[in-house]
Length: 75
Image (tube, rainbow, N blue to C red):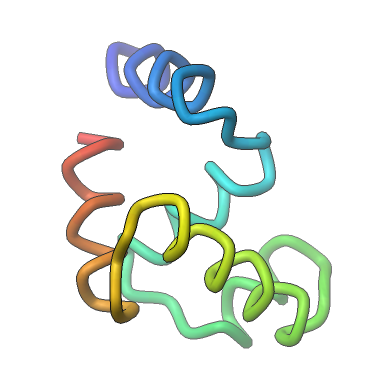
């Protein structure tokens, strides 16, 4: 429960949407765009857009760095 509270607080601070938080969670689990899309019921291209937006918000220059940030944020 604490990680959900921490993620929600961080999401508010960074103005992340519920969908962006869900994408971050699945990315931190090592899921591909296709797997994330299937889990969330959207196209892989939509996930690609979300990840690009998140990379910009977190100043991550690649997917792996974004996953590391996500893991720390959602821990």
